[in-house]
Every structure is written in structure tokens, then in C-alpha cells.
Amino acid sequence: MNTQTSRELIAAVVATADTLLHEGRRLLQPLGLTVAQYNVLTVLALAPDGAGLSQRELSDELVVDRSNVTGLLDRMAKAGWVRRADDDDDRRIYRVRLTPEGRRLWEKADPLYNAGVTRVTATITARQTQDTLAVLGRIAAAARWDNFNEEKP
Image (cartoon, rainbow, N blue to C red; front, side, top):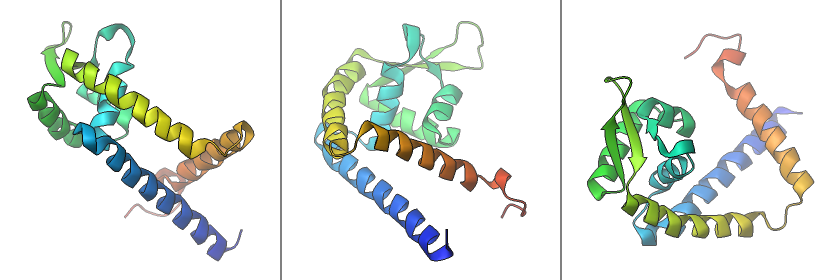
């Protein structure tokens, strides 16, 4: 693929991501949620066995820096949506869990989000979805610095 076409592809991926993020904000704002907060609620709501997640596990799942998760969780705890509790086996770790209020908020937000996803992907076939996921996975893998022979910036 030539350089110009490659640049157009990356620009289209970034523009699509920006559009999806903007629309996600618009969708969740009436509930008082940010996209990042919705993502935290979703990860916690879908976590197995109700044991909660450590902040490290949460940041790994969300693919964000732990320092960003700390501030986000502080705000969500203040709103009453999540709570931190000591880990039974390791006193250095806090387990993050949804509160009942956080679960109720997620139960309102999730159907709205799912309806938006369904609307956005309605014209795409299952095969196109699989192909797109594969291509995006390859782009993400190739974009990681450890795949370059050059020094990191």
C-alpha cells in the first residue's frame, strides 16, 4: 500500500474513533456519565464472581494508566457508584466493586449504549465485522513501539 493510502487509512480510523467517542459522550451525558466512567461500570458489572477487581486489573482491562484510574475511581466513589475495599489476601491491594447505585446506573446506561452500537453497526455484515476486527488488530499490533527497529522516542 502506498504512503498516501496508508495515511488516509490511519486518518479514517482516528476520525471514526473520534466520532464514536463524541457520540458516546452525547449518549451518556444525560445520565451524568462520561465514557470512561461507563467503561469502568461495565468492566465491574461484567467481572466474574462479584469479587471486584484491583485497580491494576481494572487499568489493564481498560488499557489505561493506573494513575488515570485512581482519579477516575476517586470521582466515582464520591458519586457513590463504586467502593474500594481491602483485599482479603493482600493488604497492599484494594478491590473495586460496584455499589448498588452504580449497578442501577449501569443497568440504565448499558441498554442505551447497546442500542447505539446496534444502530451504528446495522449495515455491516458479520463477515465485514470479523474482517474489520482482524484488520484493526493488525494495525494495533503493528503500531506498538516494540515492533519497530527504531529507538523509542
